[in-house]
Image (cartoon, rainbow, N blue to C red; front, side):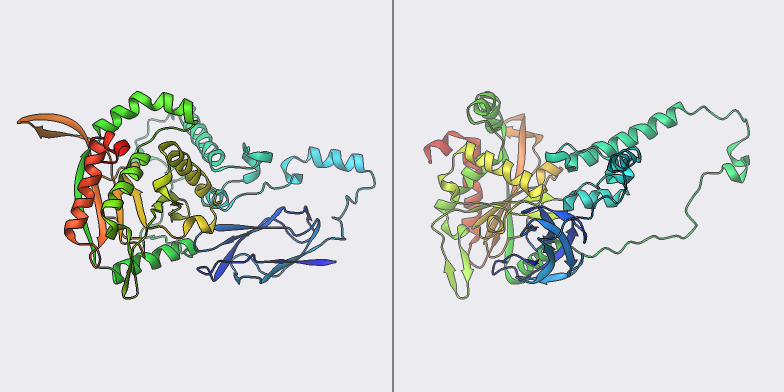
Length: 417
């Protein structure tokens, strides 16, 4: 009996999805709950499991097709079995298949991010050794494979003997000349935008067009935080099984500042201002597919260890495309850290309908004047972009100064003063 494979239910904010990758083809054996196809929405990549054990039947929605909730993607025949080996001697057939090398082996299943990386570099996935569960290939495996190829090419170039000919380079035969692109060639490559990239573009334009966006800047001496982290990071990791980073300090400082300036934690709903009595902090995470912002729910009730552990989990699952849609929706305030990429100063863009976003930047030692003397301090520029329709300049500046004061005197985070 054929069982339909359907698009799972999509939340209200997501109306359709795109078929990214089919992991099975008609006639392949499938196990119950085995991932058959990846669907990309404007927020996450969804895996569609097999509804039954059997054989893959007809595929009704091909890769690249747009689908909606409950639409039929294909079928699974739960009564059929995969075609058996037609060899008269099964043992000889198995030996032949084994001796034929990778040609007879089953191609490895790839996640969307890994598949995209393999296709961009023109790699053979069967030649890459997987370190993930069940031998699954991870992004790190692909990068190590690329490094190995580059090292091999470098070693080959270094080992190659110098040509004995004394002919000047300009007089070398044409057959020995280094190939070059034809003069005037201007290559281009057209690639469709992913749903996530389309959604990012829409929201950024929406923020620019609908909000009276303004940015205020300040700088913070990161010395006290760095000293505190250096002193306790080993004991912290041993006690909580997670590393102590900088982001937890910024989350805690932001929550305290939001309590003092509730307009920064508010949003506009029609002609009303909606003040949120909770603090759901979005943490911007960069992935190969684009920027996603998973949310720390009720961050005011979270400790440093819980914040750090949750952010690490967000980052890992974001890279693997495993974040749930519920984890990417909502949020009353956002934090983005361009400093991890080397950004010294930037203007973050609002994440609608939020009224503000905090931008962190690179820590850089700079000469500072203190008590009439020049000293070197590890400084970071901070940027707060805000919606001037509901946040006044005084509130925005005071909000950023509050964060600065708490980071430069971390004891205030514990005492909430």
